[in-house]
Image (tube, rainbow, N blue to C red):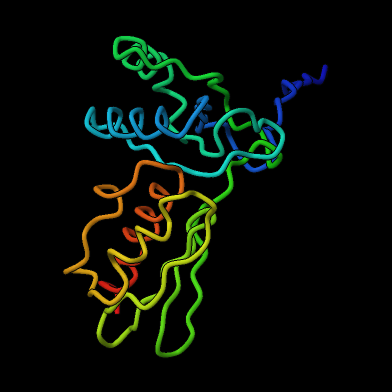
Length: 184
């Protein structure tokens, strides 16, 4: 009796870190990242602003992570709005993984959120902003003067006051601080 042999087709292994389902958009400057993020979120696309992986740093120090399956749709939408990313690349492994912008440190009575180079510290009991630090943009002292000493609810939004990468990072820290404080 003859034996039948079944050969299994060789499977292509998934890239390190799992299947490719995310991509990143790299822009020339922070203003373009902010415009693109607002545009894509308004269009209902789940995007996240992150730090770029060191291997592709060029231009701005922020990237937008997006669902890779929607790449063509996003590029068309961006082009219609006169925004052209320097690169739109898939995240194919750990070396191209974007860097999370947030670091959270609990000091007991105070909570600090760092987004990129900007730090925002809040009294956990009163929700009063006690410190703003970091960055190197000329508007950081102004931003700090406007929000330190006020509660998260009373303070003006950093995005309404500043237009530099530091102002944008402070807005991200502010939003993350609101999320963290609402969990407590």
